[in-house]
Length: 102
Image (cartoon, rainbow, N blue to C red; front, side):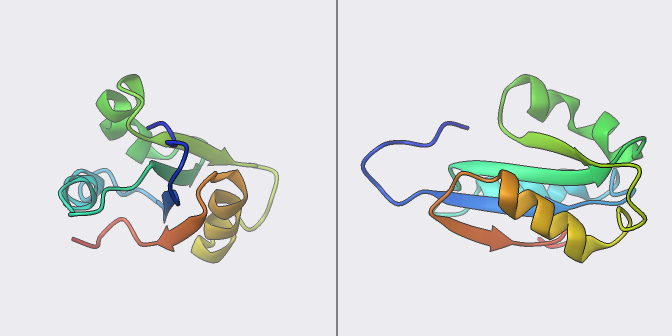
């Protein structure tokens, strides 16, 4: 998703961990809101199975997929992944949610 000039932009950050069964419903829910986000940033650790279920979103540039540094002991921590996503996001406002929220 591209950030449009001239208005306040909204980023949604979603930390995931083996969320391949729920992330699709979460993304559909986010994309059906009255105010759709300008970008969606999904953060996981390398090798997470969630990435395989996000390929169609990645190819269409509907989301940005970020892999947390594998060398960190904290990559399984959703709080750290939220922080990483916030630092990677470009929006004026950042909304945090989880991969099982509809």
